[in-house]
Length: 230
Image (cartoon, rainbow, N blue to C red):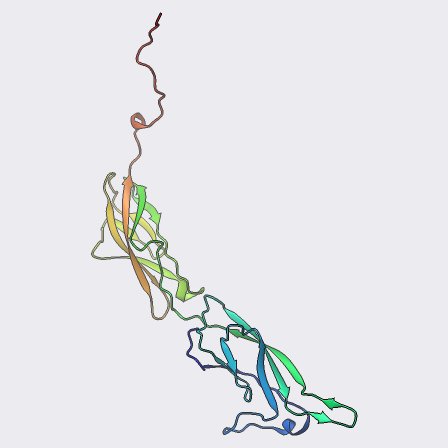
């Protein structure tokens, strides 16, 4: 993923049992076979890869590979001999063979965790409660594994000693919050990739108490007194 242009991905090799190519053996000075030609005939519509027609080396193109967009690429590579055979009655053109090459894209940690807001995150929580209150979530676009595993923590200067957060984002209280107040804390989300990437958000908790029965809207309106008009 995100490899520079012309990075070697794989080398495909073929041999031709006919003629001189069957005895061909590449040397360190020349890795090409003059009797064979390679090409990519399918699966490379975005020109993400190039193949050296002489050596069979497949390399990356100008466009960057993105695992989050596509995890695998299937290329059909064709190799053809370069000789033609002519007899009195027939002429044999180049002979070719095709092979499927599957390229898996390795993931790198190129996405940081993100919350669903870039400003403040407001959440209503129960007042006068000790224990679990709520849970916060961030999203990491990297593929499964450490690059997308997120751990949460509180960071200063907005730290409230009445609150605790575990690495899974679960927020709880060790001291009850009073109704009618707001609590501001900063939550950090950090992935486990290399290097570790992070983002933060200001979380505003609004503790809400239970509505007293006398204040609840459970009574129908009624007229003060009944009068008859004639």
